Image (cartoon, rainbow over all chains, first blue to last red; front, side, top):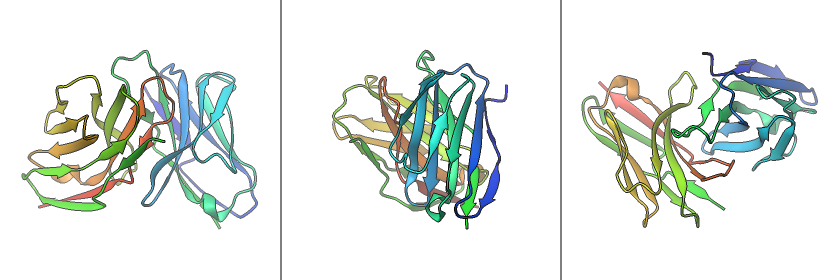
Amino acid sequence: NAGVTQTPKFRVLKTGQSMTLLCAQDMNHEYMYWYRQDPGMGLRLIHYSVGEGTTAKGEVPDGYNVSRLKKQNFLLGLESAAPSQTSVYFCASSTWTNPNYGYTFGSGTRLTVV
Amino acid sequence: AQTVTQSQPEMSVQEAETVTLSCTYDTSENNYYLFWYKQPPSRQMILVIRQEAYKQQNATENRFSVNFQKAAKSFSLKISDSQLGDTAMYFCAFIPYNNNDMRFGAGTRLTVKP
């Protein structure tokens, strides 16, 4: 059982370039999330999805877009990368039907924008 | 807006001793979950312990226990018999029931010294 898998694990982009981060989960979870982690700020929610075909904004959505065409996948896109988007990105998934509620996280993607 | 505060950016403890990490949160909700996550150098976010607000009994998981004070909005983590493998960043997190925005504190970096 792989849980939550993120690809790639590392990436360096030039300012203005675009890229897509892929998150895949095999636990049949309804909810999926994208967070960014910055030093001294913990994790902050970028976007989330409560089901296939639905997405919503989180705390820091500007500069990012997401799509959830399949229940198991949640994509995070950067259309025009900026140095302020240098961060570690985490995907997570959850289900409210599990009495032991909690998020399952991927291993993160370290993105550097130069 | 819900906020989570971890007032100790860094802490250290001798191997085999006990350490307590502090967390406070601000919310008007009555029903919610609280979590402690561990992030070792591998970057993986690992769930340490979970507490449901309606449960008065403090959660315990082996060497990890919490002191949950709902009226004071305090949720501290106690690690007993500290081990070198406990060295990590620890994040306190909060989410109301039926919500999709888990809020994290800024983290406490714990070092266990031999």
